[in-house]
Length: 284
Image 1 (tube, rainbow, N blue to C red):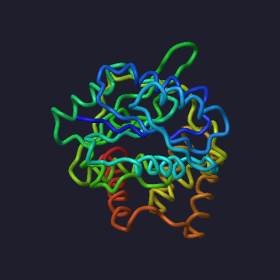
Image 2 (image 1 turned 180 degrees about the horizontal axis):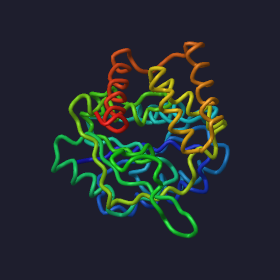
Image 3 (image 1 turned 90 degrees about the vertical axis):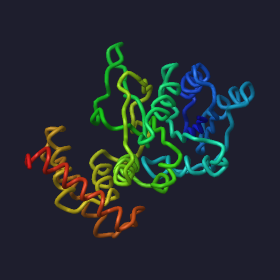
Image 4 (image 1 turned 135 degrees about the vertical axis):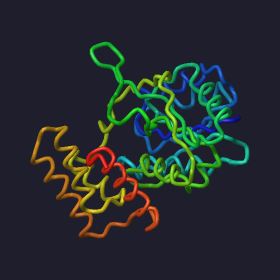
């Protein structure tokens, strides 16, 4: 199986080389890497050139400068990279971040999982961050969910879900849609992916605004959005955080901001959330 790996990169001069070197060191060699320079103003283009000059599997495309925001911008960059390729040449489509380090058996293990399990539509490892000199599990989501920095899709699954959505929550929307279509998402816990940079450090959106917009663009009904906001507030141990999230969510509703998902997809997402709420909270 052949991999197409697309890496959006915005001002990643200090991180990108680690990601690309970890790809060069993979045991599995049948892949192509498209690095999308998303309007970088640092030396990211120079880092990219080093790899494209020495390895024919690495290519690049340059985009104009734009505001770097979570969700829509990174998916837009991913799509621009995807447009340069012929999908019939590939079997697995990956969206990787520009600040991760993959173990040398990463692609080999992903390919093996897809080969042996035709029902798998999305596969990945677990994300680890450095703390006090040690690499520890990031823990921002459950261990059955493949995180956004390291998505690997079976091509047929990727096509059936309509690709990635240019919106906050894209990396949850994909999981819900593919499972609704009968595909499975699977995490290989033995694959430890190192995240070099803390997410959100280069974003301009406040955390409460982020969650409020996230729940809105995920298409959540008001009650479910409020439940989700309360969970984040409990994590932060801040009642005011709940109200700030809700305020942003309601502002988005009042403005009727455009959603990147259909009415049917909204129904599926909310149905899945209700099911999770009943199973985990109400024990029904």
